[in-house]
Image 1 (cartoon, rainbow, N blue to C red):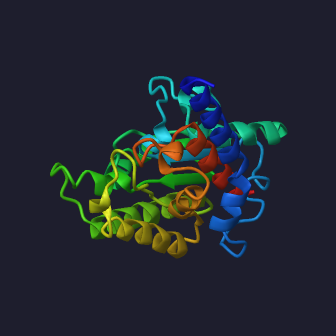
Image 2 (image 1 turned 60 degrees about the vertical axis):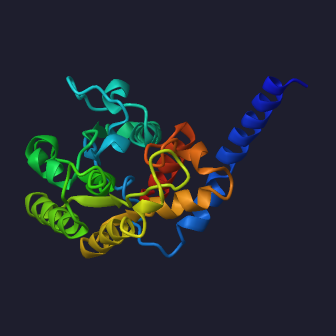
Image 3 (image 1 turned 30 degrees about the vertical axis):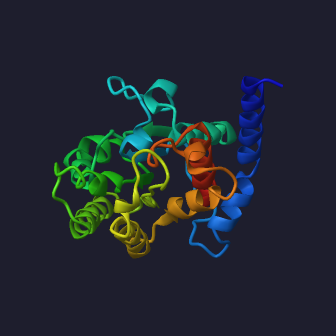
Length: 254
C-alpha cells in the first residue's frame, strides 16, 4: 500500500469514527441535569423567528447583502446553517424563519452597535448568541484593550436591553471556546481566557438562558480525534466541528 493510499484510508477512518462519536461526546459534555428548555423549538408558533448572532464562527462566510431568512447563502456553511436546516425539515409545517446575523471579528460592543437592525427589527422569539473569543483574542495583538470585566459588563447590558425590548424572548448563550494545539491558540490564552467562559456561564444563569458548553464539548471531542480535526486554528470549526456544534445546539433546545 503506498503512502498516499494509507493516509487516505487513515483520514477516512478518522472522519467516520469522529462523526459517529458525536452522541457519546455530547452525552459526556452535556450532563442530563444541565439547564435546558424542553421543547423550546417545538413550542414556537407559525412564523416565529429564530436568530443566530455572534462573530465569525456564526458568520461562517454568509452573504451580507440580501441577508434572507431560511437561505443557504445568507447562512454560510457553519453550525447555524446545519442546525437551522435540521429544524426547518423537522418543523416544516410551522413556517419558522431562521436568520443568521453573525459578523466576523465582532466583539460584544459591536453586537450592541447593530442590535436594533440585526435583532430588534427582526422581532425574534429565540436569540442564540455565541460571542467572546474576539473580546480576548484581539487583546493579544495590542489592537483592543478590553478586559473580561468589560466583556461581562457589555454582555449584561446587551441582555438587559434585549429582555426589556423583547420580554418574551428565549435566550441561548454559547460558551466561547479555544482549542489548544492548533495554529492560533497557544498556552498564552490560558488561564485568562477561562474568565470569559465563566462570565458567559454566569450570564446564562442570570438571564435564565440555555447554555451550550462548547469548550467542554471540544475538550471531550479530543478524546476521539485531535483538536485540528475539529477546528483548524483552535477557534474556527472544521466541517466536523461545525456538525458537532450544531448537534450540541439541537440537543440543548429540543
